[in-house]
Length: 226
Image (cartoon, rainbow, N blue to C red; front, side, top):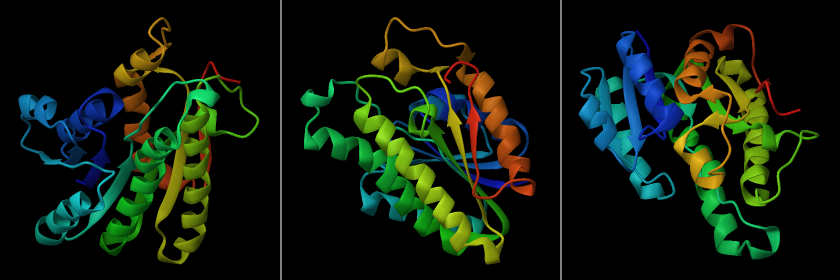
C-alpha cells in the first residue's frame, strides 16, 4: 500500500487516477479546488483537500496533513494543469502568469514542501505535454501552455540529479492528446484518440514501477503527435 499525492483530481486524468489508486488499496491525498466529484465518489482510501495550487498558503494544508497523518509519501503525481488557447499577440502577461502559476510554480512549490516526507524509493511523476518537447509539432495558440510544459521538463531533470543520492526518482510523462474536459474547452471540435481513464491506467502503472527503470527521464506518451 502506497501513500499517493495527486493534484488536479476534480476531473479528467487526475480524477481517474485517484479512483484507480484507491480501488487498488492505496491511500490517496487528492488536491483540487473542486472537491465535489471525489466526495460524491466517496471512497474510504481517499482524503480530499480543497487547494488552490497557485496560492502558497493553501499548500500548507498539504504539509500539515502529511506531517500529522501519513509521515511520509511514496508517490507524488503533479497532474494539475492550466491551458489558455489564444493567439500569441493576444496573450497578456497575466495570461502567462496564470498558466505558469499552475503548470510550473505550483509544481515546484508543492514538490519542495513534500521533499522532507520523501524516502528512498519515492517516485515523483510530473505530467507534461508533447507540446513541451523540443522538436515536437507545435500548435498555434499554446505559447503559454507549451512553454510552461517545457519548463517543468527541465525542472524535473534537474531535481533528479539533485536528489539522486537520496534515491528519489523524478520522471516526466509528456502526453499527447487525451479526451479530457480541459482539451474540450480549448479545442471543442477535436476528438482525441485516448480517454482520460485509458491514460490514467498507463500513469498508474508507471507511477508504481517506473522509478525502477528511469530517473530524470522524459517519456513521450503519444500515438499522434510527432
